[in-house]
Image (cartoon, helix red, strand yellow):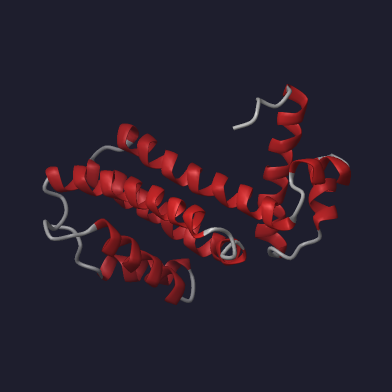
Length: 177
């Protein structure tokens, strides 16, 4: 790993990632990179210094999104009223992730399979921890597998016409005790 960035360079990188996440969410992953630099308040040269290609920027944005989702699992474990509530809330966040990051995820499929596998492992680990705690509390079926649960939630999210329908479909699934 390289040396840490100077404070101003780190700030520019963070602004670029935040702007890119917003622009990609609003306009898709083919949005002009110039718009991202402008929204971040930096010049194109600064953007290309940090992210030489669109793919580099997409990977960085998606990596940040996955890391944020996984970090929320730990926060929910500490803050939720019960393990069941923590799991359910995280699954709702996972639904949001799937529905809003679908184009972003598809845009980086050309990246190394190790990177994509790492993202999947991180999300599976977060879900597994929450599921295990809910299982110990007797709040979920004993035969429930985290990978199956994530596949189910992803399928519901992608098949539903909107968020409300996805919520209704998830409520129909008998995964709780």
